[in-house]
Amino acid sequence: MSSSSIWPAVCFAVGKQSQTPYSSYPTPSEVTLTRRHHPLVGQRFEVVFGGPTRIVVRVADGTMRVPRSWTDADGVPAQPEWDRVFSVEALKDLLELVEALRRGA
Image 1 (cartoon, rainbow, N blue to C red):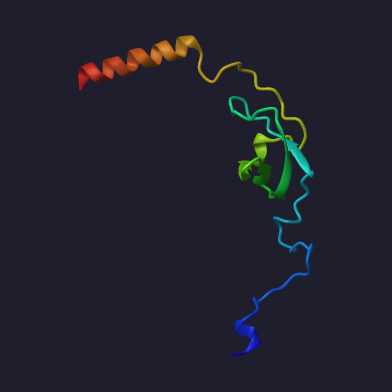
Image 2: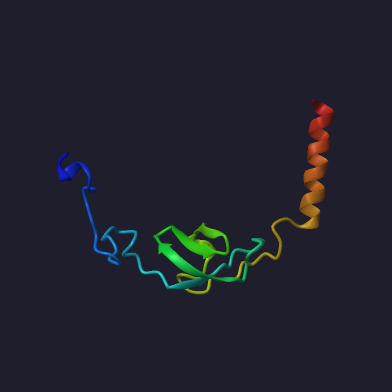
């Protein structure tokens, strides 16, 4: 058996990162989850891997991949102008629409 069939095509020294665009994308060593309504909002996590659109963070039982925009990796995000995902009035209107659709079906 030749050594090329045993070893992977590319080997890196221990601790050396590959030079892909993803691994060289500047990301802090820790981030805070800033996505409103996420159950872990406000918690700080160690970054395992940072890419231009996704970040992998260490959680108690392993790792979790989150959108980069859901973190403070690029600075503190601007506060949204709205306070809720849906207003009470919008939910009432939605319920009325669903009822009207059910009656028409």
